[in-house]
Image (cartoon, rainbow, N blue to C red; front, side, top):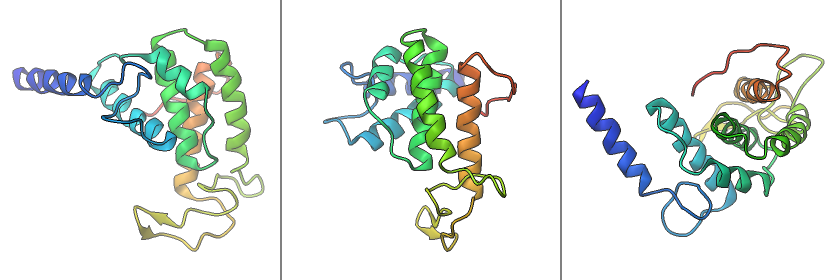
Length: 174
């Protein structure tokens, strides 16, 4: 237990050096492009969640997310949802704006849905071709496992925050 507490404290001190006070996100040097900014922040927030450490500036991160728009790729959509979801668990700041933003995200998510056979594609109108540089499909116009898992997870977080959680889905902890 002592070793765990020391490691946790070391990680906490390390990440405190990476938080940018102006936008609340986590990086060193100049601000990365928007995709990397939100994706990196999502990864740090995931670690903070596992360590049970609060997000440093959730309100500023919410502002960054709401002032921008994700691309239509599966990861971008999920990164935005996860970051806003985790920040919303910590603060009520701009809750109505987040819910309105989520309505738009739901529309983007369902552009990936294949109603006739079920499931979501990672990319619009094609299954995911590569995973970390390895070819995994020919990119046919069909759903794929990665897109279905990611976008269903995003919907579960949105439904929980929306207070209209008629599905009562359990949220996965990445």
